[in-house]
Length: 147
Image 1: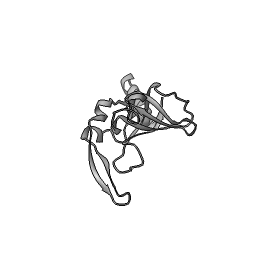
Image 2: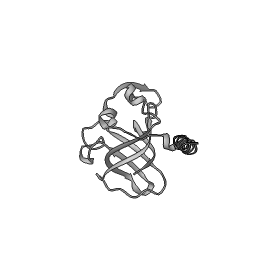
Image 3: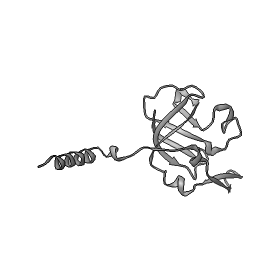
Image 4: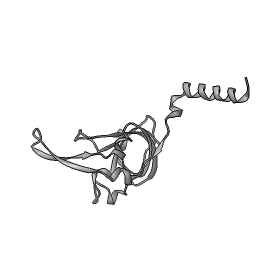
């Protein structure tokens, strides 16, 4: 067996044994995430109208994919490991500034993450999940996140 064949067989074996190597991380910009529209839907149980996101094809192709995104950390409850990543610092983010709900994402870390400070700039990797229906959750969610 020549070297080319041996190299190819080793590469194939590694890929088969490590499918996570095939999952490429895709850098996602907030510009892509914020290019979104909303529709007003009346919720009878709540007796109010709620904005629900309408994702474009650009966002839909990212759903369930491993992505990398940078932003500013906002600790919601550091002791409970609850954080939000924002496109903008806290003073200008969705919660305190004039930004929209499409400019933040809920972060659900893998176990053992460190504690973050407000406005700490970070880059995180995880599985992006689009939320079209749960009014108690943010529009974007990053599952299994790690720095």
